[in-house]
Image (cartoon, rainbow, N blue to C red; front, side):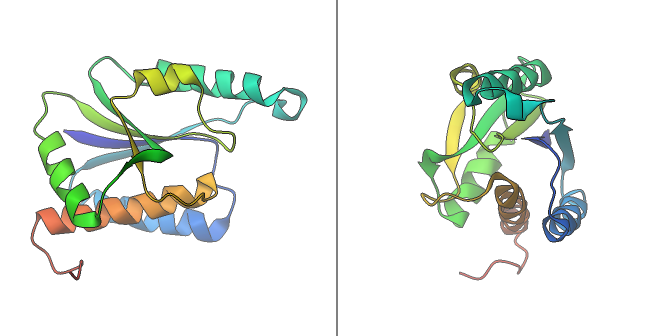
Length: 157
């Protein structure tokens, strides 16, 4: 099985982009990993927030397939400790699906159509983070989880 991180828009901060590149490379040593970056909506400043979310959501829905296990990263989702998340990922990797697709929406969040398509919502924290920062935080946690599954010493408990 492959793990995909699907995000809306490019990462604008260089230090975040460097961290994402670092963890993406690390992840590829453990599992088939891909980062899909959907382009920002054009002329978004001229659109109401609701329309921006619908357009972004439409791109997301077109990108996922019926054979994907879709996980939305959302502050209102289910919370895990890192070790619990490792156990959860290990189980999901056994599913007869092609990919686990983790979705991070744009700055305004995700529309209901995407939420309805999701198999689960997961929270990295009850705190609110910029969506670009969530990308890096998630990739570090995913890397940490894969080292736990492999019994490697990266994570300290």
